[in-house]
Image (cartoon, rainbow, N blue to C red; front, side, top):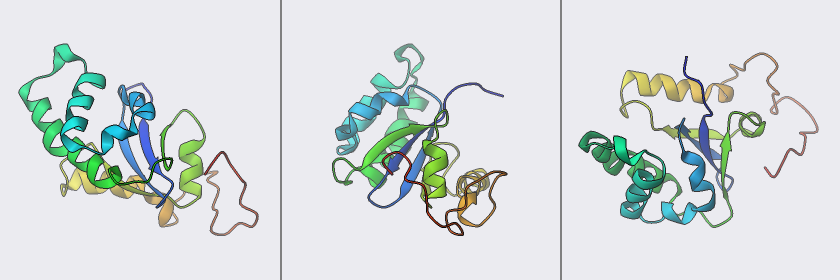
Length: 150
């Protein structure tokens, strides 16, 4: 089992989130403007998220054709102030799931593959009533707590 913090981008304007996974993704928290331009975003990810000594042509192609494309498509036109970086070491992921946010993507797996579809189903399990033990079900509760800035 890998250790580390899982990072996500949440969009408060349409109640969606994207699973970035482990890595140096927290650098995006102050640079959401990078999401506006797909080519700049690819360069930004390669220079800020990944170790420059470990970048090969396969990773460069993956970032250019998949990650930057996905992130730009989902968040490139989000109004300023509606994006937030969250991780699984705080309550924010729990909160957005309780509030009905939907996962729109993950950088893991090939889009359309069985693994990708299983990951997406797992990331959205809170929407179909398959809640983990102790999960706050906001759909059937009264007086939803006013957690953080969600």
